[in-house]
Length: 460
Image 1 (cartoon, rainbow, N blue to C red):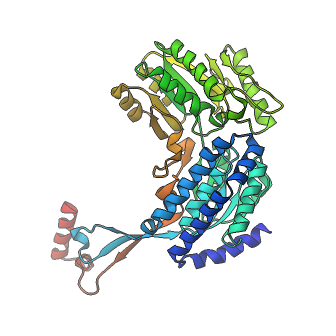
Image 2: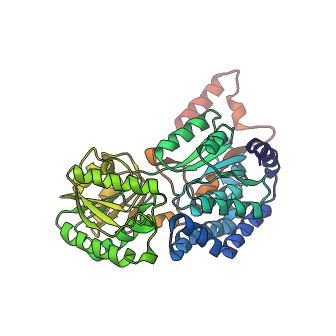
Image 3: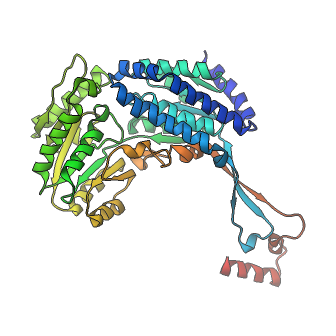
């Protein structure tokens, strides 16, 4: 299957899809839903081969989240595609205004390895719902799930509608040379800049779901056990290989000791068993994380907790590292692994200043029962998403927009927001025939028309 040939076929198909009935889109989504339900075991097996991820975690974080997305689209697509009327002011009497949602055309989706099924299929759902053709390029690192995605697409769709191209950076490079109408990329800010630069050559719109160091604030007003359990789950879910995982924790100095004791307990309860914990995706990533931790310790950091690790299975147990210095990899880069960096603060202003000193993150979390503290943190910091007294779960909400801001991403996905991302929101104005208010403003200008313009400027 040749990339350029498929791209041309999808160009012709995208023109047909402009007049495709909505029921045809819904039928495709239902077929996708049914495939997922029928192939639950295949999804479990593929993701396990890539990440040694427990079946239950695959069901929850890969399959269930994706089913929620496709069910949301099936239930609501008829409403999403309906032209939305807009109100008309006195200056536009006689006109009717509406917003019409048309497919952008040919879409490219480049998906990552950390949630290889979920993050490949969810944007595909949005693209199909919006009426686009799709070329999907999954990660070359999660090879087994990438192959499963290819098999799924070939079982469900003709390649002029959806096609999957596997391979490495060379395949992505070839795809990015083509004039797609929209590009959806999930990955690091570094690669996101490359994707954006490539898209700019064709003035293609982009959705970039990136990452960053997502902060987690733990105020002295928290329920310590509740906060520790939720943070432990969100931080070490998927062995920390989650773009919205808490990257570093700021805990109030008054409760730091008791909080860290409870956090360690929760790590052992949740992830102490061999069958409940995911492995690091590759030997290279395992070595990177080990080297970063060693560098931090050499620079003065202290490992206050470290669970058992096994390089042969790429199992890297949860760890807590305190007093990480500036200039270290752990402090300066998104960790994307099971190392929890912890610092203390004395008041919320200090915590806010530390968060604002970094680029805007994909998520920000605060644990507090003090509503004033929550409100301050919400208003004075910026992130793609924000959660109070929990972590990570906002990603799975199918009605909430998901995405970053500035360094952590551009554009939103999930539910109606994903549909809009793959749609051109075309404004349509219908004017009456004959007399219109606008004609009172046509030249040649006279005293009466100048009065009309003065009235327009003053009141409209």
